[in-house]
Amino acid sequence: MAKVVKLGAKKEHPEKEHNEDNDLVYCSFCGRPNTQVLKMVQGPGVNICSECAMIAVQYLILNDRMPSAEAQQILDAFWGKARK
Image 1: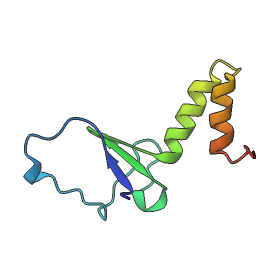
Image 2: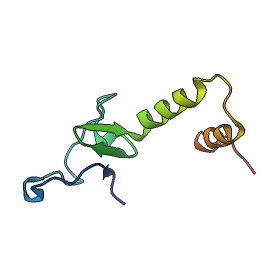
Image 3: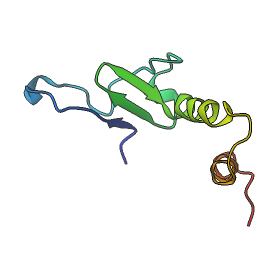
Image 4: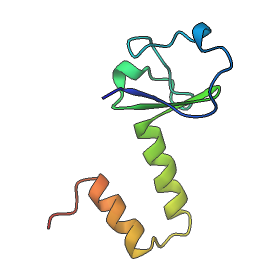
C-alpha cells in the first residue's frame, strides 16, 4: 500500500508529474517527510501527515468540549483505548 495518497484534481499534463512513492513529500503542517510518518495525504499544493490529520480531527471533535458517543468511540479506537 502506498505511503503517499494523492487527492484532488488530476493534472492536465500527467507526464510532467514526477512524485513517486520513494520521493520525499513533506507535511505542510509539521514539516516531517513521508519517511518519518505513517501516511501522507497529498492534495493540490498541500500535504498532511496522518498524525497531523488526527490532531486536526481530534481538535474539531473536542472543540465542542463534549464529543458525541460515536466520536468518542472513534477516538478511543484510534488511540488504542477500546478493548472489547
